[in-house]
Length: 81
Image (cartoon, rainbow, N blue to C red):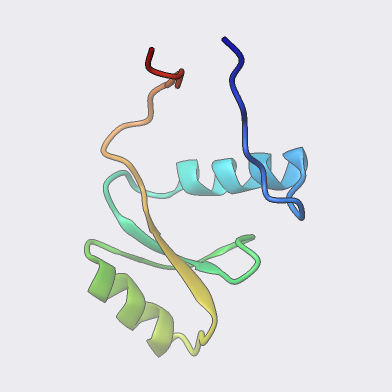
């Protein structure tokens, strides 16, 4: 059975590799505020609210909030039959 990988049209493999490195450089199980272009971490917090507050205090107005996993592990996704 074929699988499909969805990549946003404006993203390149290089962009995705950099984003993964950036996320892996952050503490596990934490909330991050990434710059709008997702090239740098602008805030880290233990909660969504904390990361959001720190980003605002740093003068950021356009950022993306995301969470790092509890642990990094390889995953394979396949359709359920």
